[in-house]
Length: 536
Image (cartoon, rainbow, N blue to C red; front, side, top):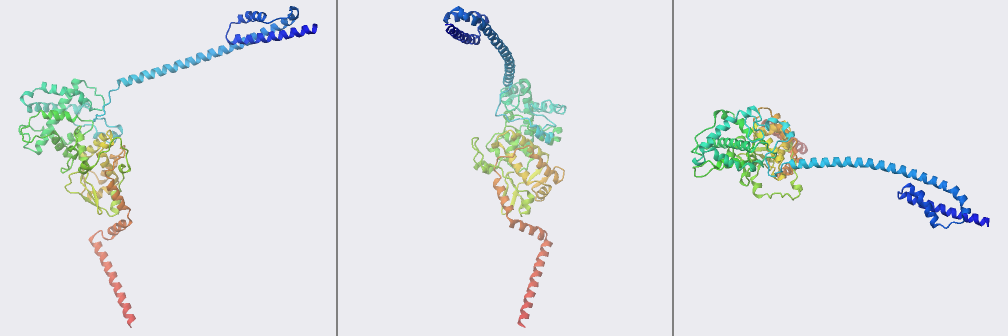
């Protein structure tokens, strides 16, 4: 009986131990207070577990319960340490998250503010600031030196401010030319006021001038330009504008060269429509009315060969005076027969720019350079039967100003609108050294008026295309391919070498023919000597 009682006592104690241990872990891991452990567990244990006689359980309970309580304390301490670490980690993570959220929020607010302050982008804008890389090549070719037009350099330099008096005098003259009902400054201001928003959209950056200052600038500069172009036209066609008898200010006439260069600079422009509308206020008594584009072209021809015609004006209206010059770089053949490239079309191999050989390489292959007389276009380049025909070019300050500012203007245009860049890039590959320029000067194709050696001209062409992307344009590819094909034929090079070494002068040619004749006679003498010897 004693052994049976001990066995039951041990069994009940083990069951009680296990039950308490399991219930203890459940209570601890669901975060119940410690007091519940000491109060609830014994109650549950004695209620639901059938116990044997007290005499049998007492010794075991007295020895087991203290160890259970010690285990409970150890587990609770471990849980407390874990909770402390978890709380510290959570607070550290919360600090990191709150700092990241603060930075993110500030950045979002800042960018939204910048977007809100950003002026609306106008894809039709056509008057830009010249990029810094291009400006560094020759600053004076982009910045007005004598007279400012438009808002970019409005009252920016003392020497430009001094020229305002000439503009104001032109305004007085302009008013005098108007019809009686229009001869008031109020009429012009009201008319100009309507154009403000449209004119502002022509500029690539936001103009800080108030509407009042912008109207005043537009009116004064516009009247000056219209008067200048009318007086210039009258010098070439005296019978035009019979009702206008005034002439250019003498001091302006002396500086017309510098004024012309200033008026074709990209940053020194007024929208063309402003000038055209102001011009329409002036009555014309002639039979055939003169368009403002005629006045502009007549003025701009000062820097070009007179026979050249702006074929681009046949299909397009210029955005400003500089844009008028781009019309000279349009070939009339491509104008009527070439299909325009749509924006969605991909550039094919035929449209990739093909580089031509240099002038020296062409001469070494026997190509003859010939000036194209009385050409009506800069673009009339041709190659046929070993003769390369090129329209004449006058290289001077006008040429550099025109080309640099047109290339800067086309820098902001799409590939389809580039006219000057493909032409100048083609010439840049043709002209690599002083020798190339010398060959073209001797052929009468280039007239060097920059006051330096041929080396200066070659340096000019080599610098013009710096920082300018090579065009995706194939208008000169046929000529480039024909020139390259001619140079790659070895017979053409041998023939050119023979001509250069033995027939370069008349005396050299006579010497060669004399040597050939002497050789022929010697050969005949040898043959006859052999025949006579055999007969004997």
